Image (cartoon, rainbow over all chains, first blue to last red; front, top):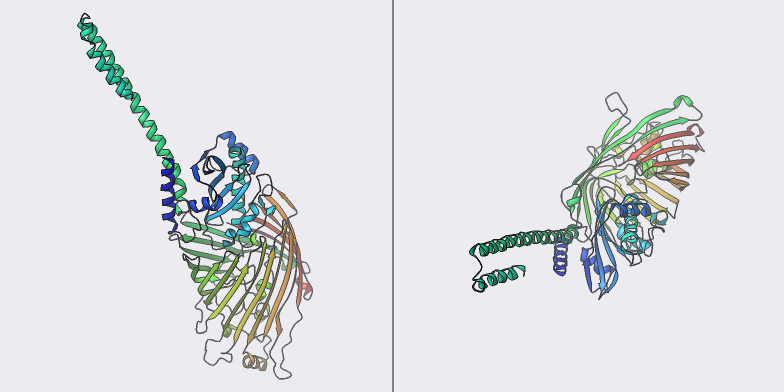
Length: 178
Length: 428
């Protein structure tokens, strides 16, 4: 049943792909990019309880914003490789969709930009900028100017994506850490 | 499954009738009624279970389908209202009577997304609070263009858009720069906010390199007023067209490269060139050409924000025009070159919650009339020395959208311009 959902999801995402000029990756492509060794992905979407939201807010220093989080678990056989969390933030004026790969120890594995629509700041999707997040946790260096360098001319997009990743790192710490 | 067991039980009950032949009819009826009641109960339980299963399945489908809508514009508003503004106070330290407070600019922007690939960007500006026949204010369309994106990442735009020169022109909101007033290099040499009407193409590569090219309107040299000092303040600012019945016999071209391959670092440059005479009847400089280029860099390691810009403009083909104005004794010929540079350092000294304080210092050196083409002895215009300005002050940010500014500017040539500035700016 689950695999059927995933297939439908992948098909929908792929079909959607061609419609967006600014869509760099579909959800499925992001999964493969983050966990190339995975044999299967399972829906592991989260619902945060009020107490968990408070913990996330404390860790991230940001409002937890949402109760529901779209998460996939990546497995190789029965072994959990990590999770992928999907999120959107507003850049300056437009919605940026991105995915965050999280290791089982709640550190950041990878960040992928799925769509970007602002007129400036396309460099956010450059590997050099995204690499800055790798290995960091909610407590260490996940803020613009303090571990993550700004992109000149796209400060708001950088700040909002970085804040978003920090929030997800905190959620991983509270909800996904093994 | 339960149903099956039940049916068998009922069957068994009836089959069992002969064996209990002695039981009274009333007893049998009672038993059947009891069984029927149980059957109803099981039926309703089954229905409830089925409903529950359906709900769970539906929810699972919703959850699974949710990421599929990822990237669609469903969650994004189609039309976004933006804005920025600044209110400044200036106090010349050597002439307090010239102190001034000004609603420098109030800008309303509307961005509308027609579809996933096409959007309209517009900005409407009010300068100096009041615009009328008897006032100094202006109402301007600062940006008005449509941008379309193609599958290969290429972006095309058409309309009135900002020329990608320097650091400030395309990032001119008061929250984006240090100091109450915009720097001199990017107002007197690069005439920010500089926009032209035309078409442009741009793209960003995976390695962090962005390129821009375009064909647009340019400047109108017939607007040069050799009798006024305006051309001394900003040579290009005095002959820009801003999309207002812009003379378009001569179009200009531009190109820019900006590399952001190392996080926190920007290195870039631009060039803009075009003729400015527009084949005007009885005009002495129909062959005049402007070429303006710049090199810029910005580096933001940690709490530091370091930047530098060099800009230079050259105007050729104005000898005959300058000769005429010189013969008429007019003070401001068209310069053959004008240039300037600045270096600036800012440091985020203190941050607490929404508040952040960043002191900065900037050194500028610029000359709006660095050189003139040769004219007969006795008619030459004097090139002035480079003006040197030091600006020290601080930006105090309140959240992302509001900034309070204070600075002191010291002019090394014309010290009467020394001044203290205070400003309030916002952008959303």
